[in-house]
Length: 478
Image 1 (cartoon, rainbow, N blue to C red):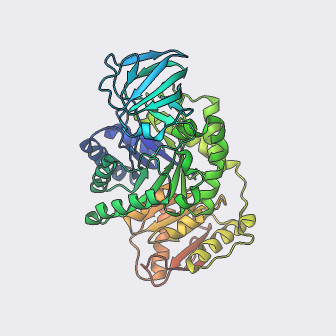
Image 2: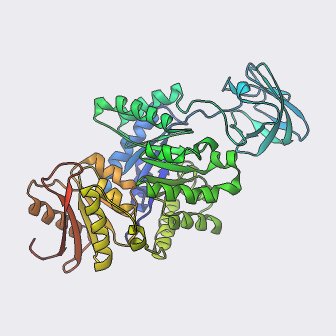
């Protein structure tokens, strides 16, 4: 069956070999995530080469996303590797401390003392440890342990409610962008952006670094800071999409606030014609178990019903015992959820105006296919814009986007309900349309007698030039 929701999976030690990667692609993997928080440039380059080789073997394109580490604020190292914090105990975070002990620990972000004041609450190790700030003296942050536990080397620090001034792009991120462009990634995910400026800077760096390779990657903003929430629309406007990064976001705004924020972010992204990925702990138990919990099944299904473009796996596929089974299970959940999803196409079009010809054609194709009961929508596209606009509305009619551009084909692998296919288009419109139908039929997506809605631009080969809608039955002469 045609699956609309896409699957992003992080690759790591459990999933980097060609044998496992090929099985993951056959299981339903659409986009590979390279986590630049771990591994060397050579590690990422080798993994990207393996992905490209396996995708060719599987006969389809798989996109690659570089996920930047960003300014992850962490404690330093302990002389014994860890300490045990007890409630009520005083504990010092000291920017000048070399090796930590039971009384204090160092910081990798030296400016943290300047961001804090008495009364602030610090959340360490994904919120498992809570410290109340009592005073700040020079480079020392004096705290009292509110919720204790084991604190080990390099655990993360968040301030409850956000407000830390660390820049979104570190020196490491800038170097990683250069590496990602040399690899030829299709998406760059930017960690901890606070506003549009952070995303604009990241895009400029990526475009400059990608110029020698002819690459302009799509930019994904990871929403994980409290400050990003009021700036969400401006971040969306300056990005190609967002990631609902529920880990750090939950630590800053509180677990209870995240489900409603997730729904709001997905809705805003779709209304803004942007992509949206839902991430973090979606199938967490499958790191160790061959089946998910029922709560995880509901979590994935609800993200699908919210309208997310993609659901993402992190440690489940990077370091888990069952990377292939996890993708198979996630794909099955997505399919089942999509069956029950209600189309509200007519409602979506009320009071909506279209100022561009290509966007009007895209919406007309959706409306026509939905009401005529067409088997498929086939869009001949250069840039992928027509397919993106169509994918913002749910109709149960699968969209097949055919393009001669490899980069567009990979970018569209993240668009909901869009199956990208390669087509070396002819300059003659009717020949190209006939070739497009033959490709869709040869892959088993339509058969003789099926009604298909086609969109194309004349003259051929111009991005943004879609201006024609045609309705045909497979087998008829065009």
